[in-house]
Image 1 (cartoon, helix red, strand yellow):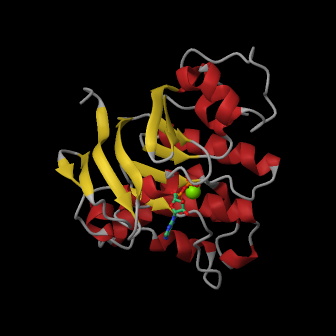
Image 2 (spheres, rainbow, N blue to C red; image 1 turned 30 degrees about the vertical axis):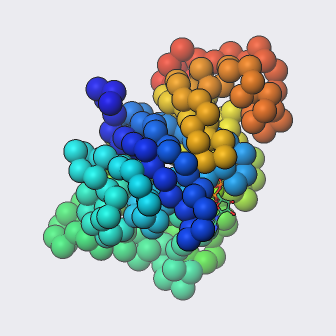
Length: 260
Ligand SMILES: Nc1ncnc2c1ncn2[C@@H]1O[C@H](COP(=O)(O)OP(=O)(O)O)[C@@H](O)[C@H]1O
Ligand SMILES: [Mg+2]
């Protein structure tokens, strides 16, 4: 196990009743970094994320987080350990206000003062939480709702934020601010595990990339290693975003990239 592994998948097999979807997955999520999982549709990316948050129990294998095996723990126990997943589909309570939704994120925190101080911090990070505090969540655009979902998940001060295709359905402008927000969450100390259809863009800001193919890890390495791998590029990254030229400059470290 790598020294700085934060989450370690060891020989994970998982599926839905019948055949295995994940077939002996071994990979790691680096502490403090952004790790992006890419791969074709149906390769098991969402399935892998579900095993982390406890929504799906692997048939075999271990997922080690903070020295504990997550396999067999309930989603709530995993949440308490500091793992928060923002689901793929919109998950705000549409009839509740933005602020109420965000406050709900701290449902495990009993101390009202702690909740209030976190809310203040979240407001600084996400101005929309203040600007639209009293509006019903259902009245926000898709991109705005996504930001509020991020804000809500941060109320638990999670150590690991798990995001499944957060850019789904967002227009290009909102997409940009969504990526900037992921970066901001990471800079604020959250380790991020991301699945993203905008694979190139996601890998560019990732410290680590994992390519899943048919339920197996095809390749893992730094974000730029995955990005620049000739076969992977041709197979899975082609045409996924505007930057299609092989000459695209990859920053030496994810920090060096400025996100507008
Ligand atoms: N709830 C489910 N029940 C049965 N099969 C599922 C379920 N969810 C996903 N699958 C199957 O598992 C495989 C991997 O799916 P998924 O993990 O969603 O892939 P990805 O996220 O990489 O597109 C697919 O063949 C899919 O049909
Ligand atoms: Mg998926």
